[in-house]
Image (tube, rainbow, N blue to C red; front, side):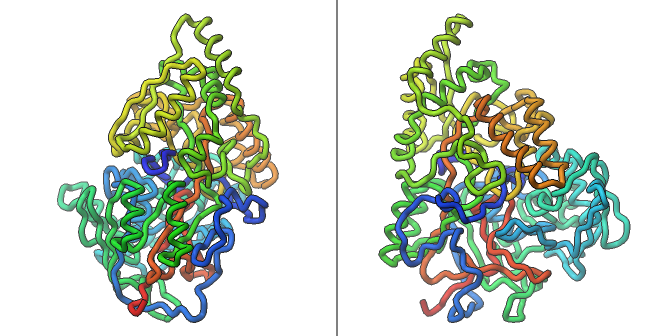
Length: 576
């Protein structure tokens, strides 16, 4: 979300993330390395495109130890899974406690996780979900069919997350370990949604106690590898190893390897970078181009290690409210804004030139990617002509109200955009708000334009929640279609992506989605963002896969939270 990189509101996957965000899985075979910047070829820096399948044989995981993980933001409305406003930092934290019903591997294949199996009927309108046996929540409540039904129904009924499940008509318990989910239309890729926030499982005993006012919503209870210990908003979140965790590690003992993880909030990229270089923290996540460039130097010097995720990336862009009572509701103004932006200059000035400039919602290697989408390119004279045409026709001054967070780097970015747009004849007003207000502003539609980050992941179906007209709403009402996009043409293509079982038909529809966005300039694309996970030399397992119950493996989880790593397999070399 917030494309100013640090600020960004990342909703979600936010939100839902729904876990859910998407563009399909990158092949890793593209000449441009799936959108990755070139960067130095240095020992210690691992990119997604050359991700090792397993740890080197001389790296035997050690048990015990504690690590400090710095994250970029605090979570809004923690920690009930159906009401938390979950961005990248949220998912990274809470997935130590909560787990999804499914999990996705690096190739995009969906595996059952808390589920033993998922089976559709012939037309994909009924899905049978069977719970894995002998799993319990941290409070001793059994994970079973009743727990699944409870959690899924809460997700369906949620004003926040419910938009992702709007096609669900019923969730019925059919036996002690099994539920049937009936949907109103064919939904061939439904299980991928169960890997993200809509599939998170919390203890029904705890949730009922919270709803009765007898327990705290900030003390989450899940099935995960770690148990909740302590939460201090805007400061830290501490978890300890779950001794009864159900998933077995390769050494025959349960995951996790670590005794404890402390997540600390450090919203400033430079603060996290300095903490990493000084050894104050053990690992962090980040998508700031200038900080990544600085950290690459530390990797080259041998001071730290770093993993860069350069596939199925998040997308940085200017999010525009199509329903705003403002000039941005006119496609001519949006097109002028796009044409006035000198993308090469912007990328060098704000990202150290290491990101690839985006031309659509789907990154190279993804389903729907097009080399030429038709998105407007830099043409200042044409931009001025569109602004003049709008003002002559409406008799109104073309004013853009751009919001950003109270962060010096973000303000500098906003001022650069202001310069671009005012050179085209637009009047630009900058409004700074607190970081924690961003997601709320997006949900309510209380904005005209601001920097955002979203849409990484595996499958374009997971984008419907953000773009379909049914998920748009009036200002003041919660809506996951933040831009309030209403387009019959776009809805039609999204419907094909959801219901079709023909991959070529789905690909063609996704490509058409790309063209529609370019034609209507619903958003102004900026970058395909690289996510980096820098860590100390003593910390291992960042790129080591966990072994799944069905003999598969996954080294990174989340369908849209693409910068989120598993924590079960992290371990510390005590002698390092």
